[in-house]
Length: 220
Length: 221
Image 1 (tube, chains in turn purple, yellow):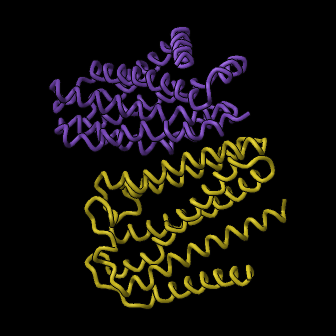
Image 2 (cartoon, rainbow over the protein chains, first blue to last red):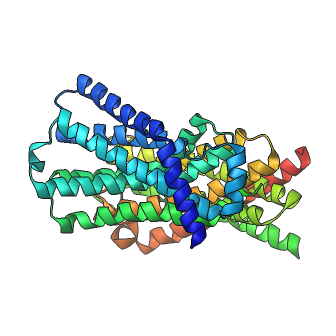
Image 3 (cartoon, rainbow over the protein chains, first blue to last red):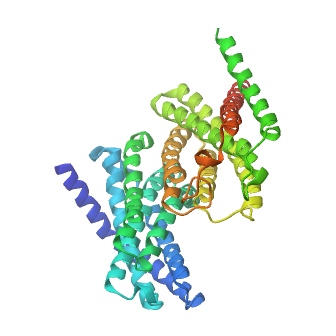
C-alpha cells in the first residue's frame, strides 16, 4: 500500500513538474483545431466527428510518446521501487488522464469553433458525446501506453511508435467512431450501450495484456 | 517413424490441395442469385485466411516460448516466429487478392469500407509493423524479446478485431451484420466435401513452407 502511495505521489509530482508539457499538449490540440477550422469551417456531422477523432488521436500520440521518456537514473530508481507491471499501470494512468483531459479540451474547442451539429443540441446528447469521446480516447491511450514502452525499449523513435501503434489503434478508432456517431445522432442509451462497452473493453484489454507482457519487455 | 509421419502429412496436404483445386473448378455448385459461379471462390479464398490465422498462431506459440527461454534457444524460437509470420503474410496477401477479385464481381468494387475488410487490412499492417520493429533493433536478444512481446500483444488485439468487432457493426461480408455465412445455407454438403479438404490441405502446405524456410535459414546461418 505504501509503495502504491509513493508511486502515486511520484506520478502526481511528475505531472505537476511537467506542467509545461501539459500546456504543450493543450496548445497542440488548440492549434490543430484552429487549423482544421480554417480549412473546413462548416463540416457535416460525420466530418465534424472524423476531424475531432483525428485531433484527439494525434494529441494522444504526443502524450503517450513522452510517457516512457525518463533519464536512466530515474528508471534505475523506479525499477527498484515497483515491478514492471506496476510501472506500466502508473504510466498508463498518467497517459490516460492526460489524454482524457486533451480530448475534453478538443471537444470544448470543437463546440466553440464549429458549434454542435443540430442533432446534438440537448444536455442528454452532449453527455452521450462526452462519454463516448472520453472512453474512446482513454482506450486509445491504454493501447499507446504499451506501444510507447515498447518503442522506448527499441530506441525511442517517434516514427516507430506511430508504426507500431496505428494498426493496433484502428479497431479502437472504429469502435469509438461508431459510439460517438450514435451519440451525435442522440440515439438511446440502450443503443449506445454495446459500442460503449466495446470502448471499455478496448481500454481494459491492452492494460491486462500489457501487465502480463511487461515483465518480459522490461527485462534488462 | 518420424520420417514416415512427416512424409504422410506432407503428402496428405499436397493431395488435399490438388483435390480441392480440381474439384473446386470442376464440381457442381448451387445456383445462387448474384453469387453464381463466384461461389467457387470459397474454396480458394477462405482457406487462405484459415492458413494465415493458423500460421500466425504458430508464430505466437514460438514467440511465447522464446519469451520464456534464455539465450540461444530464445533466438532459435524467435527466428521460427519470424518465418511463420512471413509465410502468414504471404497467405494474407493471397486471401486479400482472391477476396478483392470476388468483391469486384459480387459487390461491384475491389474494396469497400467494410469492417471485415478493415480487419484484414489491420492484420496485414500489424504484421508489417512487427517486421519494422524487428528491423529497427540490432541486438538479437533484445530483438527477440521486443518482437515477441509485440507479437503476443498484437495477435490478441487482432483476433478481437477480426473475430468480434465486425459482429458489432453492419457488414456486407457473408457471416457478418445479418448476412448469412456460407455455412448456414449457401454451403451444401457437396461443397463441404471440397471446402474442408481445401482448408486442411492449405494449412498443411503453409506449415510445410514454414518448415522448409526454418531448415533453409539454419543452413544459411
